[in-house]
Image (cartoon, rainbow, N blue to C red; front, side, top):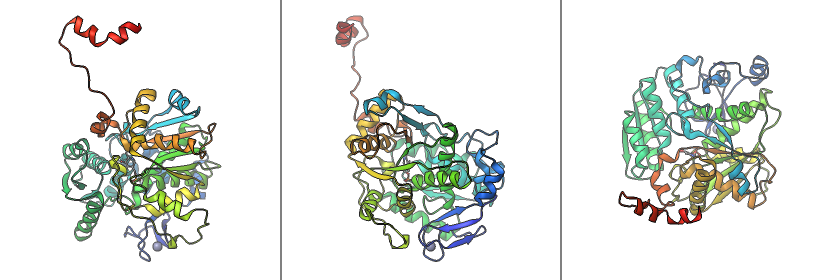
Length: 420
Ligand SMILES: Cc1ncc(COP(=O)(O)O)c(C=O)c1O
Ligand SMILES: [Zn+2]
């Protein structure tokens, strides 16, 4: 492990590498892990040389000493598709889709959970826990199963059935909380504090961001060292966004990349805490981040994974958008479902609503003149559509039910046959 220590997003106070509290002891802000970038850059000499294909190929920039703590699953190494037909419809010839639904538990969260579990293993944690809208928990349950460490997951009682089923089948102890994700989050904090369990909670646990940043390293490798103009990230708590930004900053600070992309924060109008905070800041230059208050909202979006009242990594996410010279865009839920359908039909990627929000917001940003049509745009499709089939069923017609005979089939297909 080559990490230097921790730095607070709010007040910039630093802590040594052996600091074990997950939050800033001075102000309670979230911490980010820092590394000796120049030294690591000199060792890397322009590229990651590991023969591993998963996220542990980035070991020099991960907070563990050895990849022997990695769960024995392939996390990351997800495909990046050129989506020409989909992009053409919005006038975007250089549209790329990163399909994170192909991770072991079918979401981007596996990157974070794999690193969190590796850290828990390295320190010998006997028990892990986390609160989740569904995906973080199901990925933690999956990684815990791979590592053979027990885990307890707190979810809101309304989590989609596929995510709940994943949690249960991977053998997690699942506590369904009569309340929101935020209630589940607070309860998990209390239980972990009292019983000394390793707490994966998003934003609070600084190690999850270390997994999420690997998405940026991978993009950079897949683009042969090129940096896209925009990376579009669906945002709830803001930890994926802050992780993606950290990854690109680290590529620059180690000298691997000369520039960074602009980040587009993609949210539903019905869960827009981070976007609202960015709008409140407006054109003001922020010199003291401890003076910025992140908005709280009452989230009601159908995109359950990004339905968040109190963004737990909000300040880091707001900083990521502003420091990357990015932007924040919201869309109505109807546009999210339309985007979900377009992604499936024109790019053959079945995404859950939260993931489809990236494409819906990319189109909105083009319409608003934020994204220029000739720019290279990567949409991070953070979770599989199989996580929430009920939402997808809302936008498709039921199949035609017929008796098993030829006239009935021809009758049902009359329009196609007539057109042929
Ligand atoms: C599929 C999916 N997309 C996006 C997000 C948003 O990530 P964050 O809460 O870190 O902003 C999540 C979080 O659960 C998710 O599961
Ligand atoms: Zn602080």
